[in-house]
Length: 297
Image 1: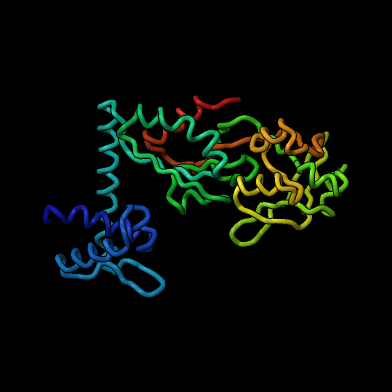
Image 2 (image 1 turned 30 degrees about the vertical axis):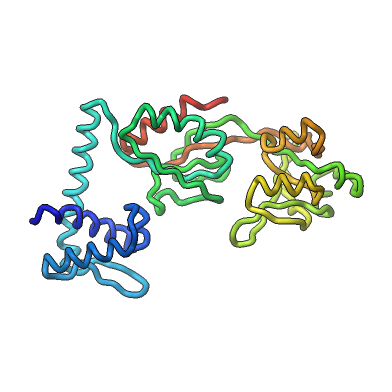
């Protein structure tokens, strides 16, 4: 084997595992064009095709499958040995990939990350801030951070943040022209500033009071998928907003927003670190311990 072929073979294994040049490029942090050139070079050197490509899929050829049977365990063995050596040397190395929402990134993740990265310079940290739930297995993440009530049942979940609470708020200018709601059902008759995802689906608003849970569809109003814009719209008097209370603590305190339906906004389970039930790397274990130690409950 030529000295430069080991890296090319690892690229082939990644493409075969992902069944996609696009996903493999994202995983390896390179361009699809670079992967295509690598595969063209490798197949030219070997003298046979390793991948079968169509417009919709990528799959190993018979020769590729035969090579993978030896290659995949060998690469896994190298990773395990490097991991073992890093533990023996006391200097952890590796990569930790995390998916999280923006609020959790701002309030939980970033406060602990600088010291973690300073203490473990050999660990590369990748954080993807995105809305909605993410399949950590399909996305090849080590873990995700989301609200506990939304987690899949087959995930290990570790509480890493305190209980949270929502606030229902509106600007005095809006309330001067509209009667304040006295119960959640009244919200259907108001203009409400809603959170919507990329598909146009609006989040429902959930309330709880003395063990009585209520979910309502807010009245139609402006729709945003960004917390800053949601708050800005509320401050301008465009409707009633339902949002985590810490994001509107300042305008509530100075009177720019008035709080509504407060008895219906009871605390609920906060953020959890969730990850699949599998052997974890030392790098991820150190990250998990650092996040747990930094929690505020």
